[in-house]
Length: 83
Image (cartoon, rainbow, N blue to C red; front, side, top):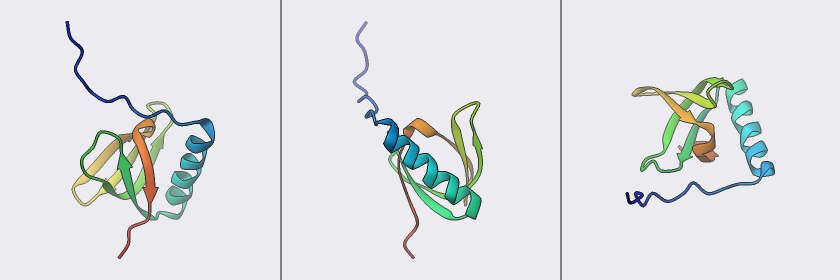
């Protein structure tokens, strides 16, 4: 059986992941609107973090379209929207 050619998620060191975790926590605490670049997703996710679930490793983002659950390990970048 041939494996599908899905590019592997880039690996990042602990420092990068910790920094991203800190940024997400700050945005969550301040209820800031954020823009996430997610590995393997064509579009960015824009919204506000409502929950960070350590059990499932997912970040729950409230967007205009509804609730989106993003796996933490798939988040490549977090930014603040430019208005």
